[in-house]
Length: 147
Image (cartoon, rainbow, N blue to C red; front, side):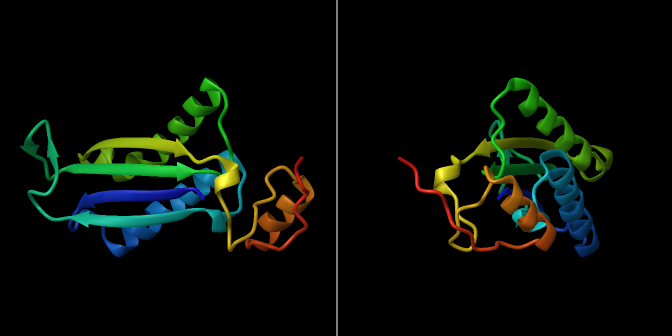
């Protein structure tokens, strides 16, 4: 996690564009939020003409990004604003610079409702989390029992 769903008009992006977008998002997440690359999932949903409406009007030049994240919580307005700025800038070459209109939102799932390969992510255990980053995969570990 994070999970990014990008809804676009059909044909808005080539396969190479999609790869570049996924890399830009992954780079933004790994650098800004400092999470392993394998946490970042990007899905593209191409929408046929006349299947996106804004204000009751068909809109075929619209890109919608919905992201859900658990890997890092953003408890302050400054952190949330920073995350949005990083994401908007990472996507600018693919959205605004190409003349698309857009909407982006980030939602946060509580950590206790998130698992990676069935394993509790060690976000509060720096040594184990660093191992996940280094190995770029979920590594089983002994989860501390809570009271």
